[in-house]
Image (cartoon, rainbow, N blue to C red; front, side, top):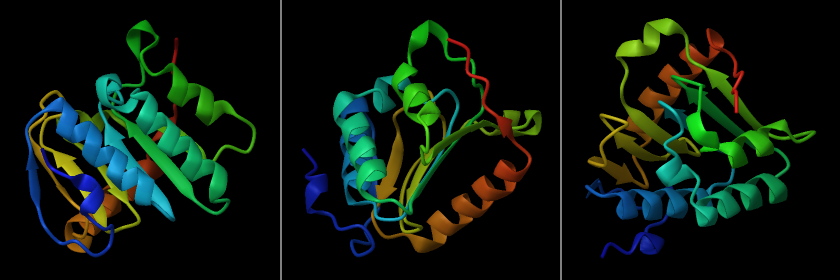
Length: 166
């Protein structure tokens, strides 16, 4: 079992291959737990089997609560979340003064089936296909993180506020 808690965000430059749900969730938790400034997520439907994990939600809430000058920007390809799967994220984003924003990517992003999470411009978890668990995580990959964060910011400018229907 990979001990993600031993990796330091912004320091540990080692690409680690992921191939299952548990490792993805544990890597995301380790990244969010070390976040200080920003979290950017691009996801098809905010993969609820990962992001609705109560431990990951708790880490996200702690990050938002104890860091008043942070941002969390979630860009969804499809903001129709069936079966109330991402209800907690929606609730957090709708709280007054929430620093979590959720937006829907424009139609032209349809060919982008990847999923990624970028933390503090340094750490990245990237999967080529949102529906598969094969991917990689690196706690210090500023070049790769910058490439994906730049793309995220460009798409964000053309996105629309999420109208998640539950």
